Length: 239
Image 1 (cartoon, helix red, strand yellow):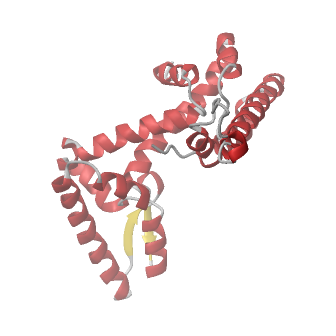
Image 2 (cartoon, rainbow, N blue to C red; image 1 turned 180 degrees about the vertical axis):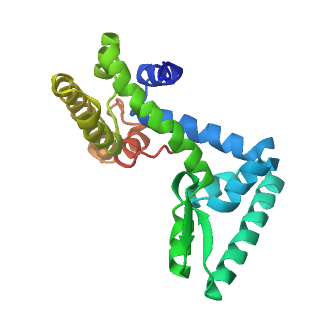
Image 3 (cartoon, rainbow, N blue to C red; image 1 turned 90 degrees about the horizontal axis):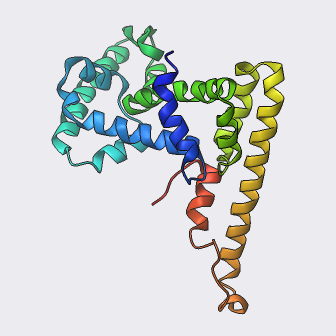
C-alpha cells in the first residue's frame, strides 16, 4: 500500500524524545524541501517555472538566504521578479492574466489586488512540504487503524503542540470510524493535556529560579523549558 512508504518517518517521529512528533516530521520535511530548492534542481526548467509562479513565503525566503547557494537564490529571484513585473504591468494596463492556482490549476486574474493576494499566499517550499505532510497525517490514522502497537507509541509520546493537537482532533472525525474515534480522542486528550501541564510546570519552575529564594535549588527539568514551551504553544522550533 502507498501508506507504507510513509510509516517509517511517522513511527520514528513518535518514538523520538520530542515535544511534538508532528512538529518533528514537519521540520524534517522543511529541511528536505530547503535542500532540494537550493540544490541542482533550481536549474531545471519545471522547477524554475514553479518558483517563478509561486515565489516564497517570508519565513522560507529568510531560511533560503541563510543557505550557502546565494547564486541559486539570486537566479530564482531574478526570474520570479521578471514574471511578477510582467504580470503586474499587464494588470495595470487592464489586461487579464492566466496564472496557476492551487495544485497548478489555471486561474484567470483581473485585478492587481487579487494577484498580490495570491502571490502572498503561495510558496514553493511550503508547497513541497504540504504535499508530503498530508500523507504523514493520513499515515497516522492508517497506523492507528491497522497497528495496535502504534496506540502505545501515541500514549507514550510527549504529546503535541496545540496546533497539531487541534489538527488531529478535527481530522479524526473524518478519518476514523465511530468505534475507533472515541479511543483516539481520549488518547490524544490525555497525552496533550498531561504533557502541556508538565511543560507548564517546568516553565513555572524556570521563573521561580529567578527568585532569590530558589537560587540554590536545582533546576530540575526547567533549563530548556522555554524552547519546549514555544514548541507546545507556537509549533515553532527555536535553537
